[in-house]
Length: 191
Image (cartoon, rainbow, N blue to C red):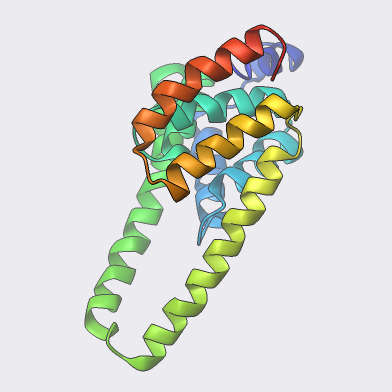
């Protein structure tokens, strides 16, 4: 699994992060990810700062988190937590990305329902939407930067984007078609 060789490089399970560390790291990633960009922050923290993964290992874990149902960051937290500390690690990492953000979300939701009709709140939300779109673009660039792009992989990415964003096909259908194609292309060294 992605990252298993990182533990080997660091001296095995004895140097793997503990349950508390997994909670703290994923809480930090969640708090840095306001407005989107959670995978970009995950890459920055897990690969660049902590060195728990190489870019290739991280992209493998992200790929797995994206094909599983549910949000990417909690999926990634479970994958990484389980890899290092089993079920306890998965639970700790998942708690890190969900508990404090849930409290913040509930508080923000209560404020929105109380004051959401005010023009100032509407203007602030419009401005935040633009910033969130920018973080999504930055995340896409950051995630794609270390990927070994070839013509076939660019075409698969463009087809996926077009099928989902332009044609508005269901994600499950797009994945059902493009995943086997991508695996076959990678198997034969074309992606």
